[in-house]
Image (cartoon, rainbow, N blue to C red; front, side, top):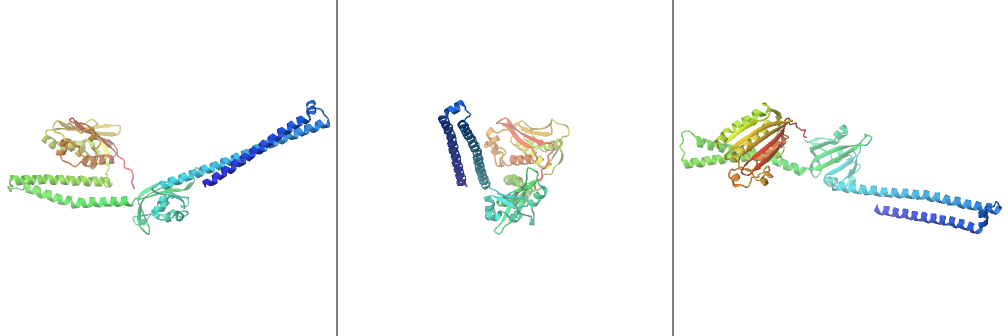
Length: 452
């Protein structure tokens, strides 16, 4: 195609040169003819005599002048035609270049792309589509899109194409699959309608992504959560129960050394149960298995109750635990009470754990439809470098004071995940040796988006 346009340009250039040569010769011939007339008949032209010779010379001069004008007019017309031809060739070349660039762009996309007309017939595909379906481009062009990717959902036919053609609205799904001779492919499918300038429906663009591996990983994670919840938590609960009974059995005298071993075993079992619970919580959060139950919550009473639950733990370390409400008396919020409660308990528990003297405070503020909850302490604090990583999984500050307190570095990660699910944000301000402040900002009314 490039050679074709190159040859066309060369032909046009040759035409222009030939026309220029003819025009130049015509102009030269006209000038020479006029000079010749002036040389042969100077007196007749100068004196403008009305003799027969003068009349003939004047007529000859007039004919030469008209011929010159005609040649000039013809040359101008030809020049314009050649220029239009040259412009059309350049436009065609630019169009072909744009088409090649578009083709390269489509083939570089990692998802299968199908362009279909208003009848659902495939008019364009990229290379990824042919690789995913293990066919040639010729087998796809002109075929019905529903025959190429006959999607099913939970074992039943489900045509997202028909739905888009009917509603004229874009549709995206992650729960479809196609069954080929060689394999079954789980798909992420996005279908967008194409509407022309005049408002007429012109077909659709279908994007299909093979998410088989992602789905398999998600299924394995779900299986792990199910197995771990039964195979780990149940035995640990039994061990904890037996240890508690052995330690606190009435009328049983246990040697002090043995009782110490039992108590340490009991504490370690509880810590292990907490670790398992947090790992399962992370797995549920990452697999979108955390259900959100939105309902009106009296936030003032909720935080007051949580603070009351931690009073005994704070008194054991001689810490003051304060709840300060700077908002209205009965602040209401539409959120998930369980997720918010678990998040706040984790922050308060950490604040007490890492504070040796002083106080822990919980401050509640409301402003323009936003809720601000601040949990502050006068504890050991963390470094600016640790602040950047504090919400990541399994992270613990490298300080010995932090290590000696135990924990696995999952609590804050889970808290951040839950708060974000509730439409909020969490941040930290800390200074080593002075304490930390965790700030939670929540919308007063969390609205769920429809997820398919």
